Image 1 (spheres, rainbow, N blue to C red):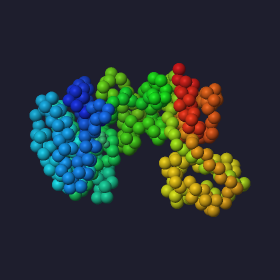
Image 2 (cartoon, helix red, strand yellow):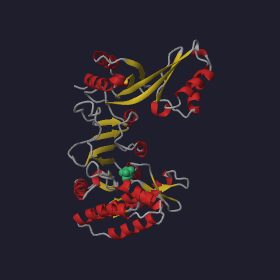
Image 3 (tube, helix red, strand yellow):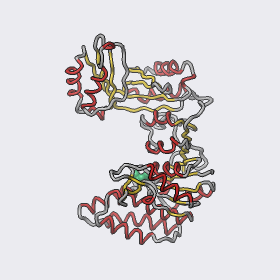
Length: 437
Ligand code: ASP
């Protein structure tokens, strides 16, 4: 069966005008049978997301204060959409129940989830689709962990008998019926779960950008869009900070080999980016994208005959682990080992870590390099293309960027260089220009 599950993000459903666009998109393809909405997001910069307002209401209620001043804003947003689109549903009554429940001690998760819940009711009425409350089909266990087995069973059997439905994103319920949300941005996860449950051909994720670009547009002028990217490539890139899609959304559909298409509600004519399990290398481009991240420190540990000392690496990593620090990269030489860590994880602990490394590992010396940035150049086409590395390093050399460290990911689709943060933008532009004509 040719089913498309379409998830619409907060900005796609922030106002009546956005609802109209969404309806046009859904009606343009009859396979768009299951729709997953977020809560209304920002209509303009400086606007507030309904989810944030709901969290505020919960905080007020917990402090014993009246939530009305904030809840009024939420109420008027939903009522405005309903009025403008002439949606006849009992939204006013629903709002009353939600307000009463938050004011009287319902949990923060309950409060936060109501944005999706109410938006789902409105959207279902507007589209003429059936509303399926996520609390009845998305399950969490008693400890609050997502319960995939139970969820697929419930969702599958429920949606089997419904031709067209709206399932609100972001939340589900525990066995006792209490509401539990995913982490922020979690409607992406719900969409992926629904796609998996109905064995969709495609999971569309509609947002306010036309997919991923090959590089950050604040750094590279007018970068090319990425048409097709594999899950692994995306992981290599998103890990470096490209988050359009919630990372956890990938797992449910990846297993089932369902492609994800990131689309722009405001530019439905754009094809967006499709994320797939496997794809042939792009015909013209060797690389798929470039992503960088600032704020790293390298700890370089030297010790003669390190290569033959049993357990040396484990002892180094154990010291880091004991301080609660995870490492990003681990380039090694015969007598050196460098641990690259994010500043955010080592700030305030560096001196203690170095002291412990001397005590536990007895190195000849330890050198610290701060102010580093990492740039990942990623592409499934790299493996088969001789000269990729030389092209990259020539570009950096010609731009006078000093490369401090090199790590060709063992996935062979990734070259990571560490450079000084002052060279960050220059390096990304140089790499982009070397590979993209
Ligand atoms: N509305 C929720 C949030 O703001 C979930 C989502 O939009 O995906 O995080």
